[in-house]
Every structure is written in structure tokens, then in C-alpha cells.
Length: 387
Image (cartoon, rainbow, N blue to C red; front, side, top):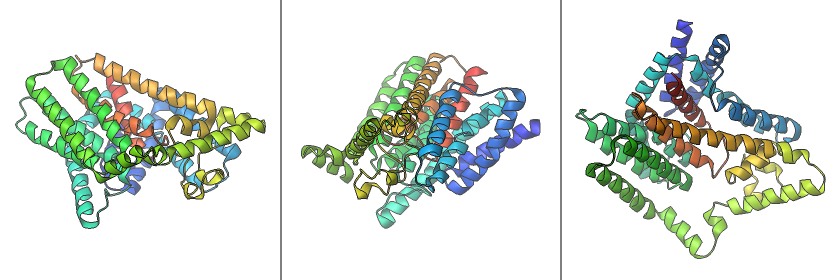
């Protein structure tokens, strides 16, 4: 078992590192780690944590709904991807306390370097082509990837008092925040704001606010606000709002939501009540003919999360998604409450990073491949809280 745990440790670490550079290698390492982690869980009867039921419930409902109602067959690839890689959450529970702590230490230590490489790639691509692009994925991936490097840097600045490079980490943190805000994706920006608030609450509960910390926090929010406000994309949003064009400001979310309500009305009139319970399947918009043609090409039904969750899996799925978020709030409360823990700073950096991803999903669908890393972070926090 020790050899299996060691192999699991290194595959999870490799998955974390590769997530910054290649989705192919990222998923390859997860494909190795997940079966081993699940095997160890059943072998030792450690069946996971507070996210187990809502996560498995969510996956079960959308899979059942898709079996019954999904009309776009190629969407099954996306669904099966979500079903399998979401199990990354459970893989961590196959590790013992020593390896969990070691994995957290390694990821926090290496994350600033990984974030620096991603940031330089984003800037290089921007100055070369005018586009924002990391090594893989779109604009939203950039902010999610830089979440842990940012909070990892703040961790080293805030908790390593005698560390002579701590101000270098503060600079790196500000740099990561700047790069993450460049694509000006609203959901990611809001995620960073919530994550920063969680981190500052933790610092306050542990240390109180010195003048130095207040200055740093003030400069962070000021710089963040100025960089976002001066973005051309934000100016376009303001223009849409000034014209009352809320739908354009919301990236067609209002129009997509109207399409969802039309589906609901149709199901009610036709007596198709099963869809109210388990939804219409794993949300390809191609099957929703009531949407404009230019919105039907999108793979998933991508609207505000409560609507997305209901369309994909009905009331049951919505309950499980809300349960998942409540579990996230509860875990955050536990981390902030247990400030005397030797690992408080580590857990604070992890949970603050997770909130970037959780807030991002409030305005879209519930799954993107990078979620697997954040599920691993949630499990690591839980293991550190338990042991």
C-alpha cells in the first residue's frame, strides 16, 4: 500500500504541474491517479468528505437525464469527461496525512514559478497577436490557473516573516493579479475579489491588521480596480449598460435564460414533468431550437448557474449544486475558525484559491476541465482539517 500511496502522491503532483501547460498530460496523470485513489478508498474504507454526496448526486442526475433525453450524441464525450475527472476529488482520500501535507507544501512552493511561466506566456501572446492565451484553454482558464500562484505568493509574504524573499512574493502576487485581470472576464474578477476577502478575513483573525497590511490591501484593490476599469472590454460593458442593453452586458445570458423558461413552459404544457425533476440532459444548446441560431452552436447550456443546473438536471441537480456550495461555505468557515492550526496559512491559501473557481461557475456551467484541480484542493483542505 505504501508504494501505491507514493505513486498516487507523485501522479497528483504531476497532474498539478502539468495543468499549467497541457490539458492532455494533465488528464493523463489524473487518469492514473483516480483509479488508484478510489481503490485505496475502498480498501481502507475512507469514503471521502463533505462534498462526496453533492458531487456524486450531481453526476448521477445529469447522467441519468442524459441517458433519457440527450439528443446530441457527441456531447456524451463531454459528459463522460466530467463524470470521470470529477472523481479526482476522491483520489486525495487515498493519501495519508504525511503525504497530504507534503503535497500541499510542494504545490504552494512551486505554484509561483508555474504562475510566472503562464503569465509570461500570456503577455508574450498578447503583445504578439493581441489575444490572451495561456498554454491551453481560453480566457477563463488564465484566471483559474493563476488563482493558486496568487494566493500561494500571498501565503509566503504573510506567513513567512523571516523569509528574505517575502517582498518578491508580494510583487509576484500583484503581477499574477494583474495578468489574471487582463482578459477582464467578470466572473473571474469577482472570484478573485471573493478569494481576497476570504484571505484578508483569515489574516485579520490571526494577526489583526497592521498599517503595512492595510497599505498592501489598499494598493491591491486600487491597482486591481484601475487595471480593470481602464480595460477596453470594460468600457464596452459600460457602453452597453448606458444604453440599457443588459443582455449584451451579460454575454447573452438574459436571452439564454428566456430560452430556458420557454423550455420549462413547453414541458409544463405537454405534461413532461419528469424533466422538472431530472432536467433535459447535459446541456448542449444545439438541441434547444427556441434559441437564436448564433447561440445554438455552444456546446453546453451556459447561463447563470441555477438556471444551467436546472436545465441540465432539474430540481434534483439544482439541490445538489446548492448543497455543494453550502459545503464550500462550511469548509471555509471551518478553516477560518481553526486559526490556531499549524497549517492555517496553507489551508487559507487553498480555500481562497478555490473561491475564484466557485464564483466563476456562478455565471456559467458547473464543469470545465480545470475543475479537477480545485476538487483536489478541496479534498486536501478536508484531509488537513480532519487529521
